[in-house]
Length: 136
Image (cartoon, rainbow, N blue to C red; front, side, top):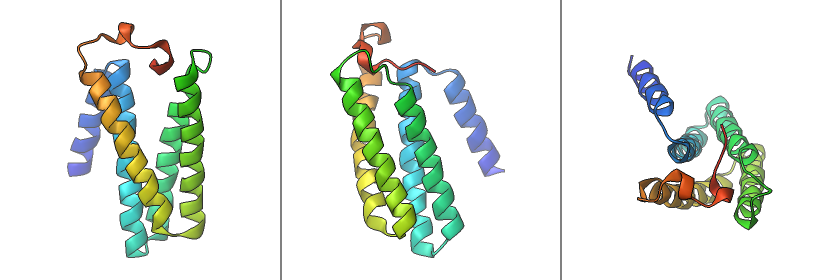
């Protein structure tokens, strides 16, 4: 029952979100999946670890494909960072070690903090640099 309420809340949040808020939600969910993968790894839950790593990879893939690479250097750097994060997640799944997951978690938390600040900013989304705009 609690899971269903959580899914309904997330669905409503997504449906009413601005583009910047959608990016924040994606980062939150990716970081949550990495934390849950770490917990599953410590419990020896192979299926859970793999499921959560895959979920984080799918989210990062979505973030990567939504970048406007023609817009500038920031989008290109984010693309490279996403590729690095995806490689570290693959390594964590293959090697079954916490170090890559911990690194990905730290990086996602830093990025999430930045995107939250952008979403809170009084500057409207239309005033944001074009390279940070995403399309969904």
